[in-house]
Length: 151
Image 1 (cartoon, rainbow, N blue to C red):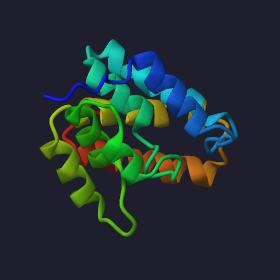
Image 2: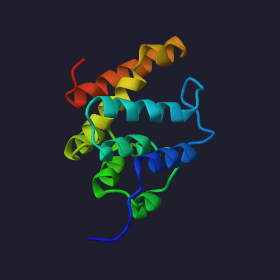
Image 3: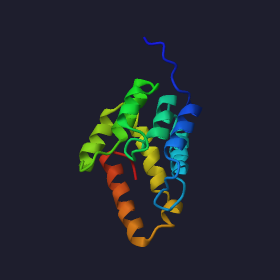
């Protein structure tokens, strides 16, 4: 067992907010709002601290806010690192492979469920143009089906 002190949830939150500073979501809102909503969704679903930390970091590698090398060396539990990597989409990866990786990684499904719930929030989608809203709604519904999530 190493003597490394793991990052606390407030430290992970601050780090994620800094890493995504200046980024916006599809509606033009600060990206950290999405991260906060996913973390809150994980907490509301009874998620562990490792899952909440993964929620804060779930898009960090995919969005190039943090590198996979940073993640590998970060003072985070192995379970959190595994969830972040599982939730990181890879270029050209079929949705079926992405879903299978999430399902194979303990804890990752709950984080993705909270992510999809926030992404598909009608209030959030309402500010997008109709074509984008329809495309994203179908995309999120397909991922929910691949993951075996209801509705």
